[in-house]
Image 1 (cartoon, rainbow, N blue to C red):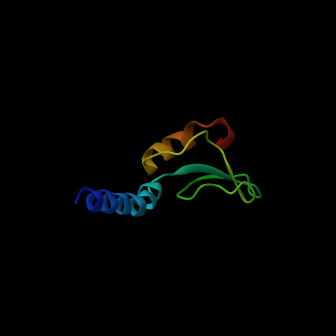
Image 2 (cartoon, helix red, strand yellow):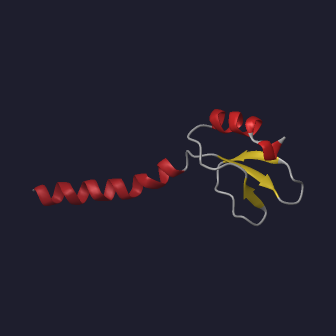
Length: 73
């Protein structure tokens, strides 16, 4: 019985991890236009580079960081 509960909990945890990752925002700088923006996918380093130092949990926090970053002014 306990084994079934552990297996079920593991499966639920495995499928819920991508949902938590989808709620992160990054401040990215476009390499061609040199403009910064807030994106919901991690910058790839080719077309978009990471202008900040971390991922933000809300878009509002990422917008605040965008205004404060020296590279984005």
